[in-house]
Length: 166
Image 1 (cartoon, helix red, strand yellow):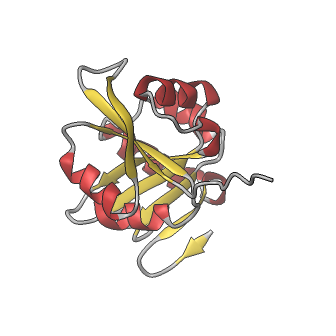
Image 2 (tube, rainbow, N blue to C red):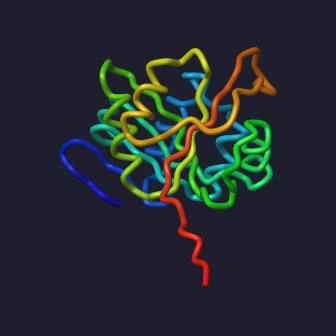
C-alpha cells in the first residue's frame, strides 16, 4: 500500500472491509458497475485508489484485473491488432466526487504498471483527452456496448515488446 497526503492506493486486500464498501458504493451509485460484477472482480484483488484517503473520499479509481474472456471480447470487438494478453490491468471505476480529480486519478494509476487498457464512451471527450495526456492511444475501431446504447473505444498504454531477429 502507498500512502501520501494526496492519495492512498493498494490492493483491495490491503484495505478494510468498510473502506472497500465505501469504494464499492461510490462506483455503483455512479453507474460504473453492477454489484455482482464488482464483487466478482474484487475477488481478483484489483488496485484501488482513493483521493485523498479512504475516509475523506473526493475521488476513486482502480486498476481492475478483468476476466480473460471479457478482455479478449473487448480487444476483438475493437478490431485492434494488439494482443489482449499483453495487458493485465484495465483502468476503470474512475469517479470524481469533486471537480478536477479525473486527471489526477489517471495520472497516478497510469504510473503503477506499464501495460494498461481502458474503455471509454465515444462521446466522453473529457476522459479521452485525459487518457491521451497520459500516453494512452486509441486502438482499433469503436464498437457498440452490449449493455447500453452507446459506442465504446479502446485505449491502450504500454511498452511495445521488441521482436528480436537473428
